[in-house]
Length: 80
Image (cartoon, rainbow, N blue to C red):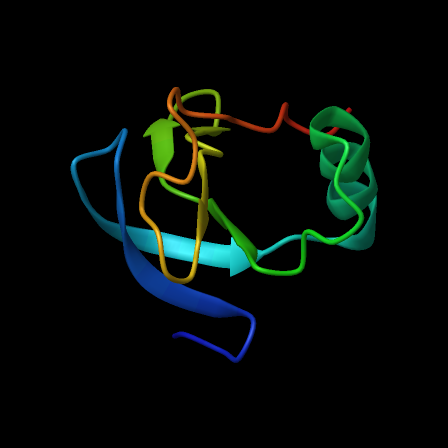
């Protein structure tokens, strides 16, 4: 079920439409530091599970408008 904070978008690394969610505050802060940008509210993260045994997710970033906002895909590391 999709909520206001989750949507299905095409993922450039998964090559299919996958569930994406908005970033948490901690992820936003991490991305701000990584990109050197003041605002990152328009980014969504892919939640596709790549390995069911470990639960590893794709975690590729995109915006609501652009599937590939960067020349090379940027993924956020999994939370510790």
